[in-house]
Length: 210
Image (cartoon, rainbow, N blue to C red):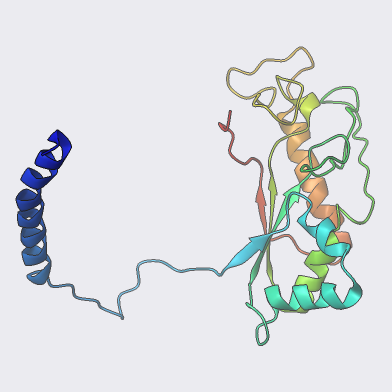
């Protein structure tokens, strides 16, 4: 008999005994479920339109656009999702994944007058948000993956780095913390001007990714 076969044969009784013991313990376990006990509240279920998903949807035919939006947000004919997550752009230009920043170029420094740019589209995310609201969505969470590169220690909105001014992040350009906060607030204001209320705002995502 081959050595591996002898070993397998020897282990079979042990495995069977362990399985018997496990089955015995499971059969003697009692689980009590109290449906009146509440531990947490689920605010809803949703989806994200970051990474150009909204742009991809906008390239569909009008009929397919409405069909897709209904599949996501319609409470009778679709999933009835109640939360929409936006990505706040940080890229200086359109790329395959990232969203374009509302201030793609540095204004010159953290205390310089901001030079915001708003195209009324936000990579088609505004359109999806407006359509979601028509279908009953009231929770819109805008989340920034990163600050723009010129506000960070590595000069890039990807590949790590830290916001200039936070603990241990000193930059020759200065402290960008307030400028970044103003940047995020301005993003919310642009949506509000289009009658879309952003209810939740995130200033970073996966900060220790790299």
